[in-house]
Length: 173
Image 1 (cartoon, one colour):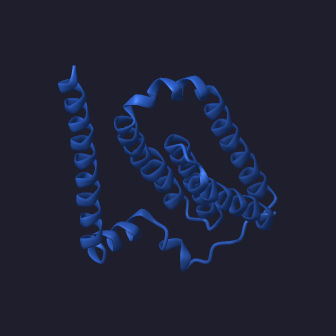
Image 2 (cartoon, rainbow, N blue to C red):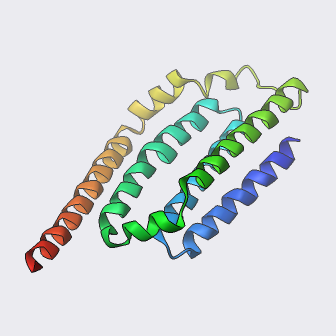
């Protein structure tokens, strides 16, 4: 059962990654990236890394993708009306809700039938919040801080570019 779930998640991840690259619309590309990040969190669940799966959804699919969509919407101010005409939020919400329910059902069936692999006692300490925080804030502190600075600089740069376009079009009037 675990193999089948992995194959489905792998096919979804590869398909959404290819779609993200091949789609010309930036909003659709960003939404396909969200699907890719959610499928990766499903793979983390299969590896018994629940904390990483939760962080994958909260941080990447949640916060960072909201920033990306915000920046994309700022840069594509002209196409905002056509976006809402062809894209319906309820279809995306229904798909995401259905995917979450299906994942919970499959995970529950795997847990009840003892099809999920047993965790060794040595591995129980690896995925804990304490172990992850210890490694993140000691060994990888520089990379963690540089990522935060890079993301902040990217958002500020995108806002400056969007503000420059707005001022430029405002001067023409």
